[in-house]
Image 1 (cartoon, rainbow, N blue to C red):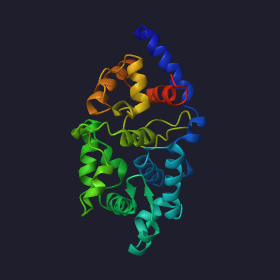
Image 2: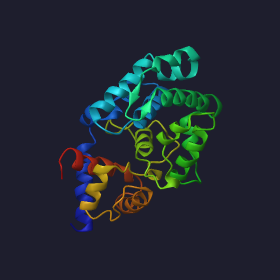
Image 3: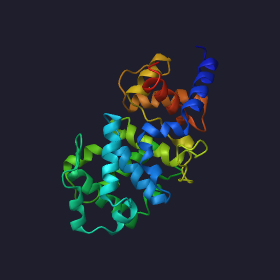
Image 4: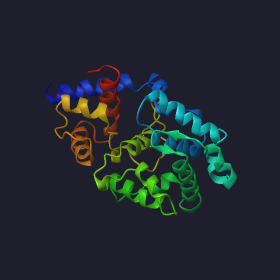
Amino acid sequence: MKLEELKSFLDFKSEEFESPAFIEKDPIQIPHQFSKKEDIEIAGFLSATIAWGNRVSILKSAQNMINKMDASPYDFVLHHQTKDLKNFNGFVHRTFNEIDLRYFILSLKNIYTKHGGLEKIFWSEEIPMQERIHQFKRLFFELEHPRRTEKHVSDPLKNSAAKRINMFLRWMVRPNTKGVDFGIWKKVSPSTLSIPLDIHTGNIARKLGLLKRKQNDAKALKELDARLRKFDSEDPVKYDFALFGLGAYEKF
């Protein structure tokens, strides 16, 4: 396809897949259970953190986490006592287990009580988003923590595509015009976001000639970002719906 044809095709597919029906099989359904900003943030962050592997398993594990927080994630994070962390005994999703989840709860409490919350950490007028993710990881692990847990927060400056954090940021930042993403972070512009690069989006991007690099890493993300920003500089990650949908649902 010529460039203009490709843009029209991706615009059409983005419109098609960005609909409430998308929520039914996606981890974003977990934060959609809530209306309070902080509940949405915490449920979204935790759900995105474990969003790899079988989607049915992801949804089951994510819902399990929320249930263990009495379906009130923000209240639990802020007011839990040490004994309440025993709720997570036996929790496991692939390599993310009760040890990791307990630290995530402690770190989130630190973020909301000492650093003004998740949105404030990710907002900056001067620093590119992928560097902000790097800084977020440093802050997230400023407390004493198990070394094993560090692998569950990606670092773009170590050549990670940081798919799960970029997905979480899409959820929080992009407007709720289609009923899918939330748009609750008003200070962060959609133009600063990067696509959640995974096996589906990567494979389709290569088939369409948008991506040459074979690995789904930070270098590939930068390459794909540059192409998608030419199509829409204000909202480049809307094309996540097109690329993911074409790969996961249409087997393009």
